[in-house]
Length: 114
Length: 114
Image (tube, rainbow over all chains, first blue to last red; front, side):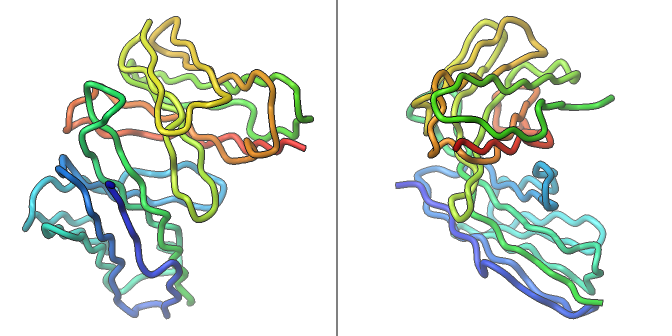
């Protein structure tokens, strides 16, 4: 069964304290991995798409990396405004569609203290 | 450009009542989706539409119906609401259904069924 697991569930950091969020996946055929940011009471906001092992993408203080079994979202010198829930999702072939489906992890709730 | 709008923002509904959640996008995207988000379970796909005039069932379709009369609108109907349908509902859209197409999300509707 296709599965996406994010860890930790919650992470509290001091401002400037770098860390990483993990997204591990067990899928039959990865067709893309996505990272989203979700603020309380809002919809997920797209951050990155990664397609193959070894690929990396960066945006401001965030860098996403991908291996054959997991992805990391590295946060360098975070600021309080980086506080949010970060969602990981994978695209795989869909049994109910001729296209593909996206499976979401349950997210990591990140809190940055000033 | 607003992107995706959803209405209402929140709703409290008596069990057994009929309810339609509205979703409109102005990006001329072909594909649209409805997800529900529950604590600890991540986002789960309810129904999708790859193009106007077509719809399909996702992971958790029971108790919900959709229609796609035109490109912009994708309403979700609960024919007879039950308490287990208490959730936050997100509408999303993507330009197409290829691996390169990113899903963009609306702000969500918080629904409580009593």
